[in-house]
Image (tube, rainbow, N blue to C red; front, side, top):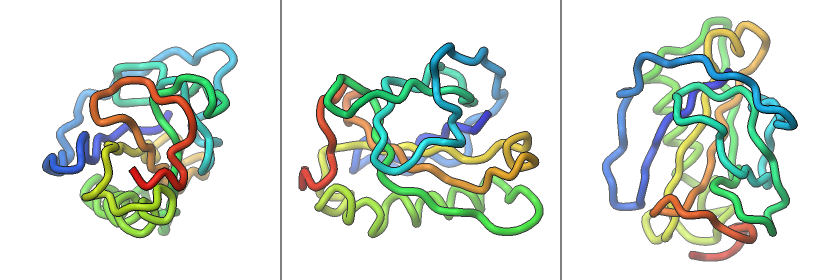
Length: 153
């Protein structure tokens, strides 16, 4: 399972620091894609949970209604799982910098979308997961239809 971390809900909101504690385990969803296997350009129906840990996600064609789109990713280095502050810093750099503007076509501060990200958990790190996945979402949490790539919104 990977950890879900809210980065910014709307462009003008403050960064939500490591306030997620008490992560719980969820059951795998039938027909989902392993959260460690998602890639840039894929759209996710939802994250299958309201918990802070995600294992399986329903990937859908971006033309179908969805809540998230993977728009950037970065790899963590080292032999040990970084502390949460380090992962948050890496995610902020990857998710709010050029990764965002290159994909959407406008800087995050000028965008109408929000963002969140997935980080490795200790279990996925031990299995070789080093990826932070940046996910774009609507600012109000409503479903989106179509890709946001190049939308300049």
